[in-house]
Each structure stands twice: as structure tokens, then as C-alpha cells.
Length: 194
Image (spheres, rainbow, N blue to C red):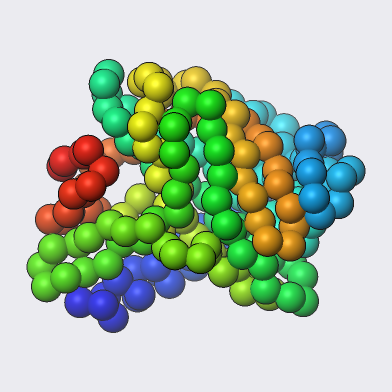
């Protein structure tokens, strides 16, 4: 089953690459600390539905969004593509969000027929010249101890911290994500069930 999970992630990355290339960015300034303080923030011309791209150091964060939740849900997921245009690997170490008491980087793995979710210890490597896809059913940012519901159409601020590129704060649109792709999911320890 592990090879199917890896194959799915590779297929998802290949499918998302053409969408990222179609983005029509305009430049703004990002509130960045560490790395390069005046790194540009790239947003698509139509910010409501078009893909956003945030630039911090040698990293590009493409099409970031959070999963809409039901009232009282204790967790949500954050998804995006993180592309490294540099010659050295970087690492996503963590983040913060005012709407969540805890932010972790998670991966999903198969244990027999059950998919399990767990924190990636030590952060997530973004390889030099490569990219990492954070998507439903795969690696993702886990927003835990939620302060309230995330409603479709809202925009929430999130801060991500990278080992080399530094810290970047940006707006994260909230989208509805259809259920599915999780199979038999073990959410134990996250206050969530499917």
C-alpha cells in the first residue's frame, strides 16, 4: 500500500504543476522576517478563485488554502504546493495561526488498510530545485485546538516558519473540500473522526 501512496502523491504533484504555471501573478510586498525582508508577495490578479503564489527567499508557496469546517470542529487542514527554486534544501519547521492553538506539519501513512495521520518530526524538507505537495489525503498543515469555525469564503492569516527562508505571514483562503480520498482514516489524538 505504501507504493500506492507514493504513486498518488507523484500523480497529484504532476497534475498540479500545470495549474501553478497558469497563475497570472501581480507583485505586492510580503511581511517577512528572517530570510529576505523585502521578498515579493505574488498574488493572482483575481484573488477570489485564482491561484495565489507567495515568495519567501528561494521558496514559492502556490495556491494555499485551508479546509472549511463544521461548527465546533477541533481541527482543519492547510494545503499548498511549496516549490524550492534554490540550490539548497530548506525545511518547513512549523507555523502559527490566531484561529488555532497549535499548528503542526502532518503526513498520512498506511497501516494495513487504515490510513494514519501523524506529525512529521523535525519538519518537512523542501528539496533544492523540487517541490512538496500538501494536499487532502497526504501531507498537510494541521490546525488544531481551533478557536472557531472556518467558513468557506473567509480569509485567515497564517504564519509559516522555514529553516533558511525565514518566516512569512500570508492570507489563507478557506475552501470547501469534498470528503473522500481518506479511506479508513485514524484521527486518534486529533479530536476528529471521519
